[in-house]
Image 1: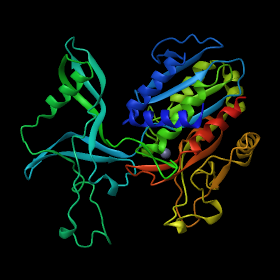
Image 2: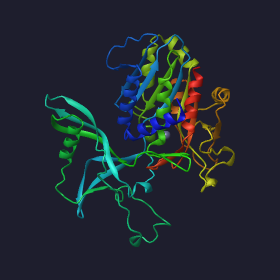
Image 3: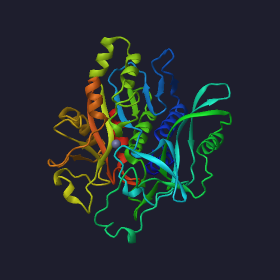
Image 4: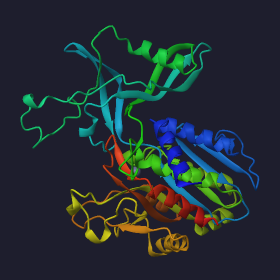
Length: 418
Ligand code: ZN
């Protein structure tokens, strides 16, 4: 696949995936198209060698795998969630001449860039249908329905020197000047658009706001890709395409929810989804352990590129550049799971393909982030490497990556199976 085709598909995937639910639905559709067989966790599995499968949990996490004779799996682990503003259960506030949404930040949101954006709403709604069955559906309002206006500088003279944002009082998006707005009617209308006309009662929802500005190339030579949710839909896309390009080699792809809030949930990497799936693939414990100890997990997430305006935030010897290749992340305190053995395997494949690699270590006087890598490594005992794609503005509503790096990582991952 050419880099151009790869990147065009990436922009489409980013725009079509405003929430983890939508990302999972889109990846499931991609796997179905590529001949993967859908499995249901609550039904009996009859796996056959030579076939490919996928399974979802909570509509927000997905695993795809090949079923082969060999046990030395190459696994790619990523996450479906991104920091955002989520609606509270009773979200409607009517005051000062407007209708507002009450929201709660999800994950480590960089709040400043959320002001003055044309926001829409998407996510999962759970309801009672006309047959008294509890059902779920995804909605996506698609058009801009809300905005968080900045406070004018005349009313806050020190806004450019010391700005603090109160997450309870300062970030409620406004959506109307008419207090006739009825949220339940709005949701029913959205469900109707999604093809669900028979809603008897609305029960609960998980809805979040997102920027309606589409992903786009930026830069004189399309050097950059700007989008929301690059962390970590960028690596979702890389992993998804990688396993779709493999036929008879042992490979597994897992995209987990809730990484941005610690991964502790049924659908998070700290939960049992991967282990449960692998145990059904290898019911015999002896064989299971042979597979675990001969497999490699590539935990792929974003990595902080050195910011040209803030270079002192990086260790100058471990400061990745945009469009200079995949980043191997190292942390002696095991915030990243890479070790010299797994790093060497990755370097070996990258160098055989002449693909560039870089390394990242957080400054020793700063705290280090983490990924699903150490969680998976310690839960299951799979040798793991943490890699990343160089990114600016991580956790902003509009992040920035290079237009070369994701395609390069895709080639390296395929190199493990060739
Ligand atoms: Zn991430």
